Amino acid sequence: MTDTTNAAPGDQLASELAELWSQYLPLTQQRIGIIRAAAVAGSASDDELETVRVAAHALMGALGLYGLQHGAAIAREVERMAGERAYDAQLLDTAAAALDDLVNRPVCLTTP
Picture 1 (cartoon, rainbow, N blue to C red):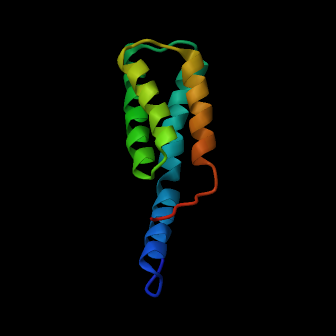
Picture 2: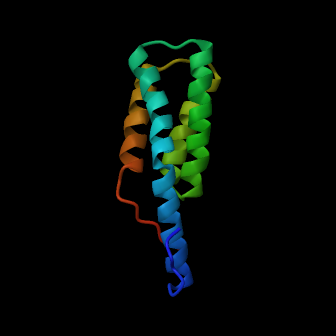
C-alpha cells in the first residue's frame, strides 16, 4: 500500500481504493473476457453459461463495491440471463463492451 500517513482521511481512503482497483483490474478484465468469449462463440453450453453467471456475479459485487452501480446493473442482467440458461449473444457482446469501457476509464474515486 502507498504511504499516506500525512494524507487527509478521505484522500487516504481514495488512494487506497485506487490502489486496490489497480491490483484487481486484471481479474476484472478476465471476468469481462469470459462474457466476451461467450458472445463471440455464438452459443454456450449450460456449463459455459454457469461460468458466465459466476463471472457476472463477481463483477456485480466488485463494481457495486466501488460505487459503479451502472456496471453492477449490467453485470446483474448478464447473471440473470446466464442463470436462466437463455443464451443471448447480442446482450453478452453489448454488456462486455460496456463493462470493458467502464473499467478501463481512468479511476476517479472520491469519498463523501
